Structures are given as C-alpha cells and as structure tokens.
Image (tube, rainbow over all chains, first blue to last red; front, side, top):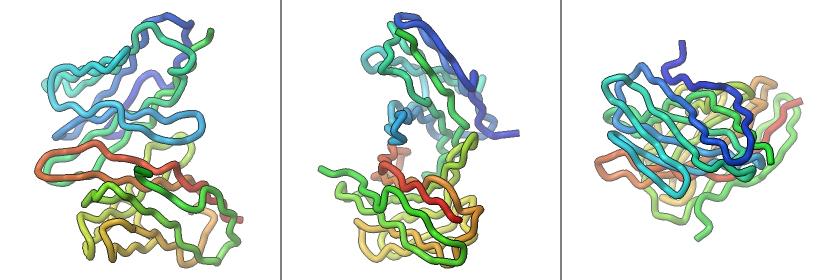
Length: 109
Length: 114
C-alpha cells in the first residue's frame, strides 16, 4: 500500500466544472505539497500546506490533519488546467517527499 | 533567473555505457534532489544533498552516484547503464531553514537505455 494515495487516477470534465482531486496519506507529515506536471513534463509547485486552506487564483488546497486527507479544488476549470496533479507528503525531520502517483486531469472545451 | 537547469533533455544510451546528468540552480538553495519518474509510478528519490560536500541516499540509489562540490551543481552519474534505468529524471532544489519549503524542479531528462 502506497503511503500517499490519490484519487481519482484520471478525471475528464467539461470546461467550467468544479474539480476536486483527493489525497490521503498514512505517514506523519510536516507539510503536504501539491504539484502540477504540464503535458510537456515540467513540474511546478502549486501549494505547500500544513493546516487549513490556501487559495491561489482558481485553485484551492485544503488539508485535514486528523483525517490525513487533503483536497485540491479547481473552480471554473479551463482546458489550460489539463495536467497531472501530484500530491506529496513532506516528512518530519528532513526534506524528503513521498509522492502520490498523480491524477491526470483533462478539461474538454 | 534560470531556476533549475538540467542537461541534456534527451539521451539514448547503450547498455553498459556511462553518463552524467547535469543539474545546476541559481537560487542559492541549500537542498538539492534527484528523482526518477517511471510510468504510472510516483516520483522516487534517488539521492539528495543538504549542502556542498554532503550527500545521502534516497529510496532508489542503486546504480547511481552523486557529488556536490558547489552549492549550484548536483550532477548524477550512471556508471553502467541498465535497461531498468530507462526513466525521466528530475532535479529539484529548495531553500531549507527549519521548515519544509517548496521544491523547484528542472524540466527533466528523458533517458532511454537500449
């Protein structure tokens, strides 16, 4: 069993829909990272959070420490949001990350 | 700022050949990492470094070596390439002073071993 699990693995939605991607982790963490991997392969850090909620533009990330669960939401989705979204758990005491396998999101115009 | 720069972007090697994947960052980050990404799998940590002269193994270090002689550079060496090392390799860096910090990634090196 992976220490970090994401769902769904694949998600296709129409432009404008509200998107939710889930991440559950079984390890103790110091922070939860959300990353975006573009179709060309580059990886960008979107959020790093250890409690509560963060918002950047149309993206919102939440975390529930007690339930060991985080969600990434995209409001008013757009085809340019099509990418693989990866969550990663940051371990206590060092900077190593444990990665989920990613959620491939496709937004259809 | 260029951020994290990886070279080459693509490479095909024959079994048994060796090569060095280059990684340099211009953000004065103290931590640097090498990951590999295989299809359908999460990124796996190969090696990491917390500063010049200090390196440590990650989850999948076998078949690889690293060095960190300067803050900027963190090359990854494959000594005897094997088909199992066919993967996409990412270098990343972060500035760590107590707390977790976001990692900045290079664009990746796609390596095929034939």
